[in-house]
Amino acid sequence: MAVFTPARAREHVAEVVANVFLSRRYFLLRLARPQDFIEPEAGQFIHVAVPANAAEGRFFLRRPFSVHDCTPDFIDLIIVEVGPGSQALRRAQAGDRVHFYGPLGHPYPVLPGKRILGIGGGVGLAPLHYYGFRSPATLGRGYRLVYGARTREDLFLDHIPLEGAGVALATDDGSCGFRGNVVQLAERELLREPADAIFSCGPTVMMRAAQALADRLGVPHHASLENRMGCALGACRACVVPTTLDDDSPYRTVCHDGPVFDGSVLRWEELPVP
Amino acid sequence: MNDIAVTIGPVRFKNPVFIASGICGYAEEYSSLVDLSRLGGVVTKTITMRPRPGNLPPRIHELPYGALNSIGLENVGLDRYVAEKLPQLNQRPDVGVMVSVAAETEEEFIRLAEAFAPMDGYAGLELNLSCPNVKGEALDQGRNPQLVERIARIVKDRIPHKSLWVKVTPNITSVADVARAAEQGGADAIAAINTVIGIDFDLATGKPVFARGSAGYSGPAILPIALQKVWECVKAVSIPIVGIGGISTIEDVRKFFLAGATAVQVGTVLYNDPGLPERIIDALEQNPHWLKARASATVTPADPSY
Image: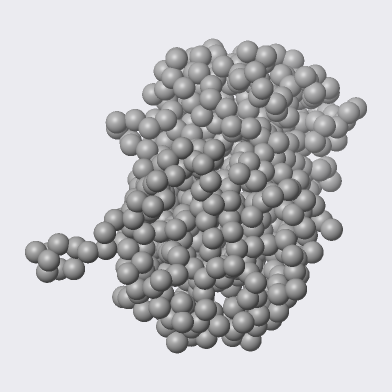
């Protein structure tokens, strides 16, 4: 009998500790960590209920956000404004209460002794940051990160210091670090020093290029996807993506089978490009 | 605590609060967030004879007063449901299970009913004759009273000791005709309603949001529609009505009882507020008179419209 393993998530209410402006589109939401919040693994997310407000009304679907950092005192999320839900969250102030449940989803693998290269873009920074630099389970084990954005402003280095050992930065306009896209930079880094695995999180186009790079080099690639979700527990089947797997269905849920997938099973050409 | 048990057909449920089909999968998925044993029961995701992969993504789309979905009855099929999903759920003590089933033909309904007839571990079947998100027969069955009566009868004849609910579509002129047909066929309850057909367009692409175009609308927007269909069914039949559609507060549940419902199913709101079903049960246990609060079925003669 095949057994479905349900999430170990719990419902929590947390106070907003701070809501920090990072750049024009990005902000960092810091929540007080509830005492009984289970330690997340890097790549896992929490499902956040957007507080109702006068301007936008009520929101019926929660929003999934990957954990950027989690300490005994707080949980950090990086959020990009893409619609009314994230706009409403941007307005959340210190002291507001936010409902969420988690941690949820399939994390990045822990690979002791392996050299890992993370490739991140935009809010895709969160799980890669947590994996290499914060999570006690995976911190500092031969991990390198290449991270890219459109401009220096969108790297928000004033708020999230990334310049240092093990990190290489890219900007489209050359205003900081390598001029060009982050996967080109990753390729250069891998020529300098190979890796045993590639982790990616960011825009679909970026992760697709990361898959092509991994294929060329013969290196495993673990990609963290996002999608609109209903339950975030593997129940409602709303957030599925097509894969090359097929036992009854080629679809797998981003919320429960993912968000981190073995990139080689994803049908990349069919994934939505927002 | 007050006893708020309800009896529907040959089965007694510990209370009248259920989770609607399609919302909580095969229920185990929600086990860390909802105490499933507190519910009157869960209606598990619709299963069909053969596994179905479901519709091309995207499958869910949020709107100001609810959500459109186009899942397309993705399910593991009868064999895996019976071998894996139901046994796993049955390992939890005391969870009431209603199994939602759909089929393309009467022959398939017979085979489904015969598969379940000798089994334990479930309270009854809910016939999904009204899914708007699949091609072909399913929705049309729910629009055809003669067919509804025949399907109800061939299933009920095979599971006389279980509760048989027929879930009806609101996307029809007269839900009363379908409810009467289900009652004639031997259904123990009418579950009203399934999602309301809707569509939305993406202004950036100029195309419908979903590959199939139309989709099923749920959430608070459909509450008054659901209440009206329940009201209509209550007047048409004497079997219990299970009210479904748009519940997002305890007050909404009270309105279903005023409309004459015997039980309710909570759906889309679970995605936002998974604690609501248990809060509804707490409130009903403290206020059992709400269950008997059915409004008078007479409307003022001064109102010629109804």
